[in-house]
Image (tube, rainbow, N blue to C red):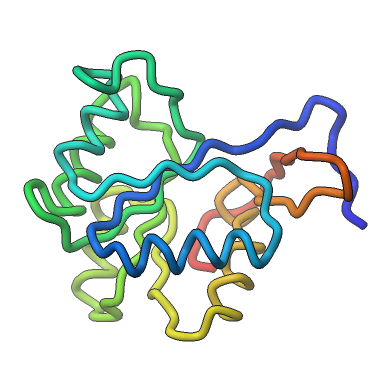
Length: 163
């Protein structure tokens, strides 16, 4: 059993993904792995930026600890969203993991150039995605499966890079 710090809390995760099947799949992966973190899903880049800034319908929204960002989105695509996050002084330190079907070197390089914390290619195998989620300490955050009856999360220091 993993130990968690007494002040640990659930991570707030913003998933920006336009494919409903991928959203369901990721929610199932988190559920199957018993990862006790709250996931908010939005389907386009414009909504994601309004959410992150607490604008309009998202006034008072909980600020996420982590953003999982698809590159190919309606409206502002993930590249533009990432660039805006990094330019905004209130959001620039937010960890952003690009989660894409593309393994093209140009997409990977551009994402890192724009300030992605990590780049993950969406695996077809759910077990691979669970393994990647459990290794998020690489981005100074960790998703934690809670002990029975407990709902906790932990932060861990770590290095930046791909999972």
